[in-house]
Length: 491
Image (cartoon, rainbow, N blue to C red; front, side):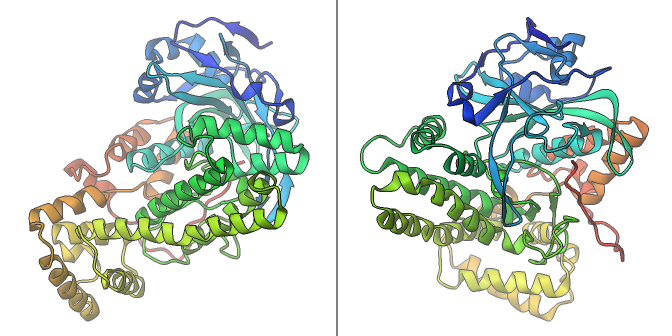
């Protein structure tokens, strides 16, 4: 039986503000205990930032908490209810294999959700077993921590705990529980659930809660719900631009996978692009490329339109006027995204100021990269350090002409060449979590119980802008193959 309120001197400082929302938004439930918990990955820097004590959490009692066998004092486990458009089709969903333990209040007064993923069945499991496998949980650990290193807003991974039990997928796999840390788990799908199942008062309570938690700068003057919508749109435009600038492909941009906080959430069939191609898609279930790299901005605004629909009753008393306000707010996304993306691309090219021809300069480079199958990450690193032989474009006449235009562009700005190169160093990561390197680390961990490969990869990814010699081995793209790389949702 799960032991409730087991006191562990680990620095836990829980509040449970989400549990004070109307009961329609969650179901209180304890995790299902596991047979033989063993902590296999633990994020000490994150634990310290949360005000937690690593030594206590790496004990048997800590393992029991991360596995769901013990509930720390102050926690109030619950499964969150939400809906979501999955590949364009609306479904009633919810945490089918996850439980929110509560919200850790850090010594600095910040609030973070602590969630167990793979902690057993809930009322929202829809026939699933509520469990997770070691491989996908380690994968989320790697990718989410890599995203954090890249400076991209993201949920993070505190721990992965093996359960000592097997779960059935295509074959028997070892089970695990991931401890995930997030600004919150309120999603576009949470608002869709409220709009579809709740009253206007319950929708308003959710909106007020989210405003207070994530957008406290929005005061009561004016139309605060319109300001809320505009703020969410702005954060998502910034987030998606950051994804595009490093070649990240989320893979399953359903509305239940878009966090209102503006964090990247729910790492399933995600991956990073090697050769630049806007049509790149890795997910085995995305057969039509709905969530391909080049489609991510368009899908983001589609998701935000679904969010705006939920807020219509709050935007204005008159429904037609509400629609007008929502459409005007949504129309800002394209310009915002373009502004963030162009600012990022200028930085990647060492450009400090703005000129009208910059967009053509960027587009022409990307076209040349696509035509030549050039590696996205390594091309920008080659430009940074003037190592054109590493770009795969050194024999391209079009690239040589483009490079002359770029050099002329740099000459027209006041900043020095050294300042320009430093900007590029700070904007172009030396490494990304290459798919073949991630698979190598997972295979060693899952098949051989060897976590050293993953630890070395994580160490290299912790500061991808270091451009250190130790990172060089992780910079090489995979060998060419006739078999396309495929990712899976990891359920």
